[in-house]
Image (cartoon, rainbow, N blue to C red; front, side, top):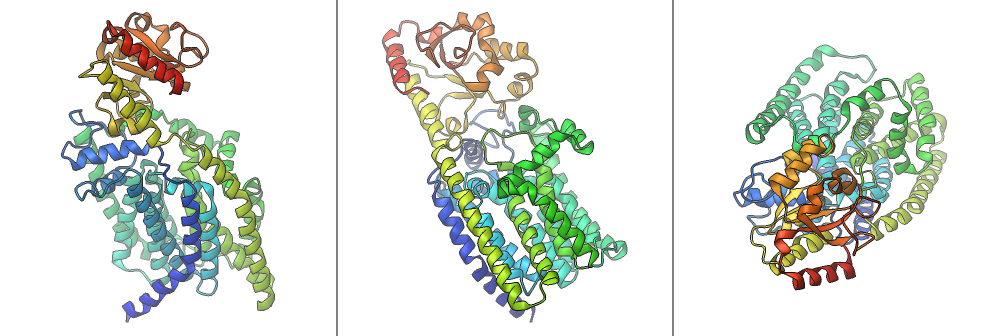
Length: 546
């Protein structure tokens, strides 16, 4: 009986996601074969794991947790033994499939929360999500965002099922597993573990029912702690550290941000504006006032339901995660991906409930609701289409570009200079790890323990590591990495290296100054007596640049 009742619900949910998913596919198509370079780090770890080398950046190196997406790495690793991994097609197809599953699950959950209007809410909210530039960019970027949002959708769906269908022991246990999945997909996903206890204690009438909820929360916590605690034990045993190496490399000021949040500093408000304005342009921040008013009005009329609170809680948690993470150079708010679908769904559901309270005539209500939905979708199209075109024309650094310009190009340079056991210090390493035969030293520090702990904190130790310990064959520095490294300030740089290409002054000396710290350099002992090869390399770089 249960199976026959559930099957029509699932099938009918498909028709509510058909249009949003088609919009999403068309939107994703706009970005073509772009995969962000950072995704290449995860691909290389997955390839090495599948090949039996372990969780390492390159075969033969000691394990360093240079990624922030453990489950995504494990998922990608499954395709290598089957010979089904392509660095563009595979992550994109997986991302699209996970996003489709998330759309289906969220649509089903919304229909359970409001059987009368949940389908319409799902269509509008998911269309807005599919049109959103940030959501689409990052779910097809090659990074873990699609898996992350899918796990969050599973947790939300389990909470809704427990609330609308009655408690079952397996639901709370499955919710614990889903919360662990979120935390194992991204470290900051740990914050989502608080949502199950919070929303389980919240009763329909608004009063906490601690007794009946205690057992469910205990089962949730037990499963979560076993899975996440087991992962932490593995991390300490395998990598020798409780924190991933990326924590040290990115120097996330979590403590300072938490302090600013608690004391309500203006900087926190500026951080919160990012996802709001990304969701609805400048109107996003203005929406907070009517949104708060709608919540207060519905609470006063006793029409504010658990479903409203749940959607806003998930959106709020996503916003909190974004606020507590450092800024991102890749643009389009990649850390805010889960915010958009829950924010749109929460606003839509609140609007429908408010309309039912304010407009009594069903026909008029449907007409007004349809007009409002059409207006919102039209404005979203006008907002996001130009934004997506702009990003597609100049996206974050592409994996294919780094693979070609650093990985394969410097393999050729090493061959031309007769370098057999060479190395390369470079900040862009996704494509480099994928195809380079050189030992890659990650200037950003993600895959290198010493660089992660010295670059921003101990310049003397950093330069000692570069010039005396690793002595890389090639060095490439640009932008903020050139300033942070400050290699020109150390006399050993002039002593040991000669420029192949200098940004802004290809024929200049290696001197400190604007535009002259950035460039490509090679060890003098490597190029001694190879003037023709060096001039050919310089000519190629001068013609094409980095």
